[in-house]
Length: 438
Ligand SMILES: Nc1ncnc2c1ncn2[C@@H]1O[C@H](COP(=O)(O)OP(=O)(O)OP(=O)(O)O)[C@@H](O)[C@H]1O
Ligand SMILES: [Mg+2]
Image (cartoon, rainbow, N blue to C red; front, side, top):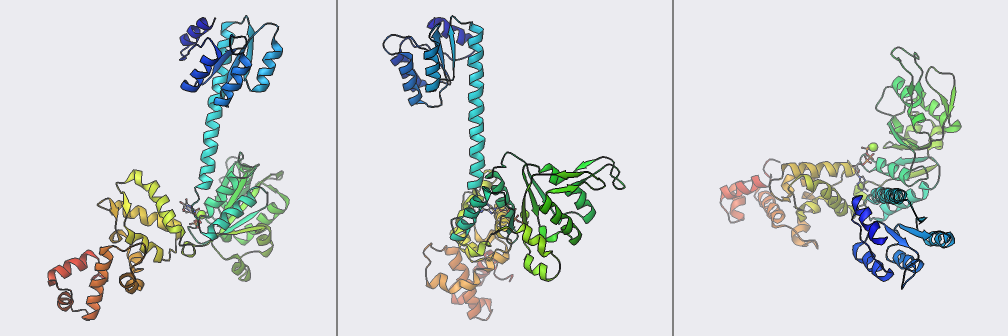
């Protein structure tokens, strides 16, 4: 029967191998890592239950289908308790066995797929880069609020990762299988924003040809992300307050009150307390939103994260460009620069450098003036106090050129003389470092 089954399975297109005794089967399982095993309970040498036990020790996820003789159903059930996925009693119909095999392989494949997708999600969460104390605190808060349903207000300068944090909270929450619905409150004029948020009925206003479902309805059982909440017009703030308080609203032009189960995460780069003082933002709405505040510190306050972020961004860029490295000088400049646009700005700067870079290494000359200028403050200590992370000859050369120019009050011939080079060499080098343009 073993031989016949092997043939039958091969005819189905599987790479089937037969083993006639338990130990032989276990060796095959060890060696070939099969996707599925069909196992008889009654065998010489080693009984099926024992083989099952060892097989699952080798691979706990291995689907094992038990063949059992009529009248020994109890043993088959015991095998299932031990971790077998299914059983079929002899004499069996071959088509039935084929079906059971196929179904179990599909289940297995789906499980692998789900696990893979899950791991990608968690990777995404872990993909938030940062080892600084300040950023670790943010991660800690994300983890804490994820398990709750409270409203969260994320604040931070432009490009600090507010949307990334909002997504991470949703993906780690009990609502992860529900929708994550973002809406930018600054992107639409007031009347459109209202129907975008709450939907509208057919004929509610000129141009409303059909009924529209709003974002709050779409986010039912999930999370709505109200981006740039600080730009919400006062009129809409009143309506928003009601939704937050009662979790219910009407579509524009509608009378039916709709109830939704939505978690609210809002974000802004405005200082809302100031906006409140200026009369631009309702205090009651602020307190509703700000149950759990998360402030993302700007990049310049967590400089230790800069090398990690550069590495992370470069990993994403490398497949598209022929860049292999970043010169130490660039990293040094990055640490000195203030990054008003934070991580988004860094992404843009690096991508631009990749585009214009002609070799395999990104050099300071491929950076925008603002960032290269960040070097000037530190010219003294770069040469005098040789930094731990080293300094490129290029950097030193540039500073010597600048110094010579200063010493000679801008007289190029004199500066060249001070450096012991010809004026044309001096000019060539100044041009290379973009010095004379400034
Ligand atoms: N800690 C981080 N690790 C890795 N990437 C990050 C991190 N923080 C932000 N980013 C990246 O920086 C970019 C900007 O992030 P995001 O859009 O979330 O910022 P934002 O605060 O919403 O910006 P804005 O105020 O401009 O809307 C994104 O590409 C994001 O992936
Ligand atoms: Mg954003």
